[in-house]
Image (cartoon, rainbow, N blue to C red; front, side, top):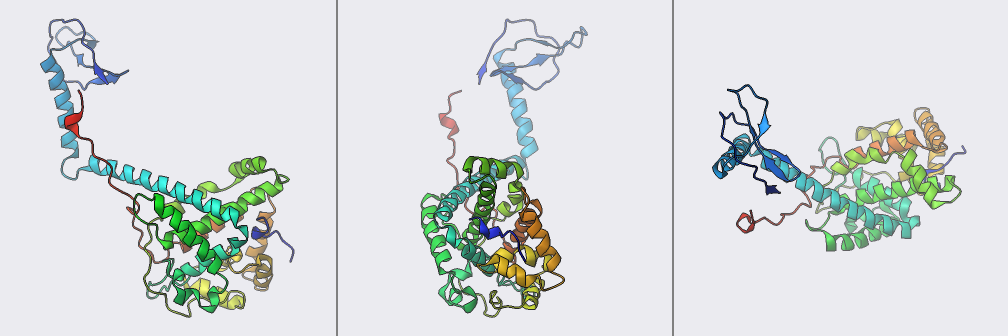
Length: 351
């Protein structure tokens, strides 16, 4: 069966003139253009609100009341403080992710021939997951020689070497501790997928890189990675996962592949979309998968999708499936890679 392969494309206070103080009702200060203003309400005269000035104690009373209200609203659970901490942590994680993606992208661009192996490395690390015992999964155990040396992982040492080299560089600039192999392996797969789709777009633009990048940005499904990026904080296993959980993809029958995908809660659709992860020759794998009536329609669907400009159906399903695989059985630490920020000493602030 002919088809297009996924892998074939490699502030200040301003005082106003004094006026007699009217009967006052509390109003929160307004901050505009760096100026703090308060309002009076001339209720006795029936006037509209107008700007006036207060003595120093009035300003302090107004500001103090607002601060007091803020403290009351945040007391108990300290929600405001908690939300601020969450925002800081999310920003730290996001910035760190951007950095590691840049490192991985550069390294993979320099060794494009390793893309198939990187994809299989990520898949095999994830598919050791056992639904019954909730053990295994994408925990980085494939880095251990006892697991990497198994027949199903033959030929993946080069991909792991790239991961280890990337880790050395990433750990030098990480402010929140070393990155786990469990995270890095899955993010390397993401970087490989992005590179392949970008290469495809460039190829469709006659090899013009700028136009290819514009095409991928305009038509690609990059926004679909949101959930994948949130699953950031896997912990490394310290022992290899049990043997016999991964078939040798290049020797397995379609039934064996289907059985493995079914065992982790996936089906023919996901098997077809992950064909690029099942060995170095994607088209050969798809020819084999097409011999099964349940898998064939999905193989044909994705081959047609890869021939389009956007490849939307294929790309979205691939991202969705990898996202699910990359968190099987893992307890994500959503504070991983965060770090304390320097505290502001209020006593040194000039008011």
